[in-house]
Amino acid sequence: MTDEIAQEKPQEENKPSPKPYSITELTKIIKDKVESLGIVWLTGEISNLKCHTSGHIYLTLKDSENQINAVIWRHTAKKIDFELKDGLEVLVSGELSIYGPQSKYQITLESIEPRGAGILLIAFENLKKKLAAQGLFDPRHKKALPYLPQKVCLITSPTGAAVQDIISVILRRCPNISILVYPVRVQGEGAAQEVANALYTVNEKLPDVDVIIAGRGGGSLEDLWAFNEEIVAHAIYASRIPVISAVGHEIDVTIADFVADKRALTPTEAGEIAVPRLDQIHEYLQSRTRQMQMAIQNRLYMARSYLDRLSSHRALIKPIDRVRHLQQRLDLLSQKLNTSMERYMQKRKMYLANISNQIALQQPLARIQRYHQHLDSLSALLSRAIQKRIDAETKRLHNLSLQLQALSPFAVLNRGYSISYIYSGEKVILDHKQVKQGDYIWTRLADSWILSVVYKTGTK
Image 1 (cartoon, helix red, strand yellow):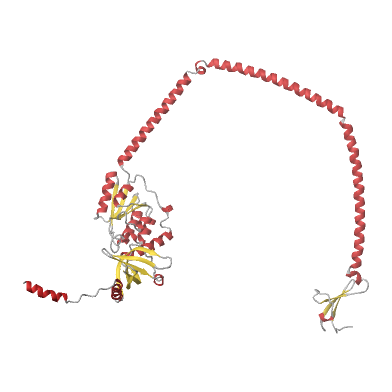
Image 2: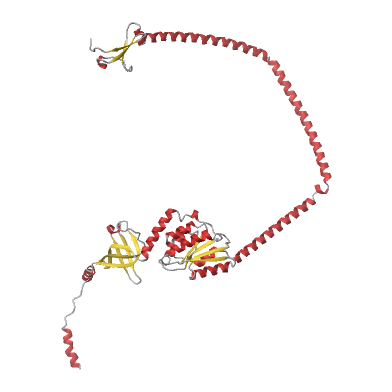
């Protein structure tokens, strides 16, 4: 046995050792292998989305177990006709490559399109923008919920757990509430139309309904899609009865939630929002009753105290004494008033006497007569000055009139001259070139006109 082992050792020592690769060589081999795959197609969910200022887009594609980095170059990103966002499920194609000193592999995307829930998310966002632009989400249109409704209508599936939760919550909080269940399908083809028809029917044929709760239990985006349809949104918006949306769980948001007058995070919360707790109402009423009783007792106590003070007042005990006191005070005031008036009249008489004496000393009639004489003198002077100015201006105007007549072209006509016009009478003929043989012309004399025909024209 020992000899066999000894014979095998030389054979192992003579075997050639394998040639080691460098990291770069190994990376190159892997890179060649990976890039030789060509175009590959992947499905996955977008995460870590980053849109760079250069126009390139960096993201991670992942499934339930693994992930891969991806890049979309700017020229490809410009062709994408929908909004990329984290959580969107997509179908992509591109080429694999090894990138960076850490030898990480990534896929360069050449095409990308939504898949599954991704398509629904894009449709959701597009419809949300459209309805917001139409004003369906306007807070001013939302109606207030009645504090204590008498009848609540549930538009939902009659077999789901959601309807049982809502009914139990409502009856527990307020047992006297009337509940009407309007059965509809809440998922699948035609579900949205049924929900919309139910909303219209309740508004038209059940006028005594105070609140509508429309919703269902949780589920996937596809399951909840009936409440993301446009016909349901318009039906909620048109409802005259306040509508509470109760679709899915807290993380589930639908178009119906934005249009409804109130959104409940869960169907259970919808029941809590729709009706108040009866025991709380009783407590509130009891509290207000106690407050009113205390207020009335306080008011009565204050009124009794006031009446007690009045009854003990001296004026009410001996009213005749009060009257006599007031009469005495009135007599005193009357006496003071008479004395004050006499003193005032005396002072005014003395003042008028002083004024009369001062007027007599100043002789106002003589001063007035002097002023009249001075005024008559000034009036005469003014009249003479005005007449002199009128005569001077009349003479100047006559001279200017003579000068104007001497310069007037019509004065020249009186000396035997004439003025010729073109037949239209608009222009004076200054040159023989203005007319030609056969033209009519007007000739003005001192006191008459002549219409003539040009026989010949020329210079002297």
